[in-house]
Length: 222
Image (tube, rainbow, N blue to C red):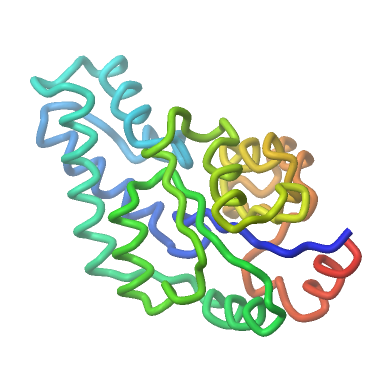
């Protein structure tokens, strides 16, 4: 079976934004009077922002803002920090160039809002590689539901079983596999030995591991 598309998560895969999301959350929610810690945020890696707010409200008590209002303000705080830092991972541009040379279609499937995905890819100089950008915030379901990956595949005009999804969280991996796609995971060092990664087809340390030889095996022989 030939792979014809690669669909990337954004946060933790293309950009090293997880620490920035966590930093923004700690600062923002503490300003609201919620004593959110780094440990709280580490446990919610890959969790959609509105679910993060709901969890923190249950744990620390609700702030005088609706979940929707707090989520929007949290997004704005994190977006400003990410756009300032532009934390593109090493290996991103070479991998995207290699895939483009092989005529592999590319998309992003993320839990982040579309305006952030568009802004980051434009500012980091990689937007032109992606034929589609799918945001779960515009769909009925977020990860771990497969909707955003299925939507990305549909936008590319590719059947899901001809696509590869690349993720850094168990939540995202679950979404990829539920979409009937091949899955590459890039776990953090702290989570590298989590037994749940067994669900993935491949586990890599970084995008730099996806070299020409890896692509030969993946695209031609799956």
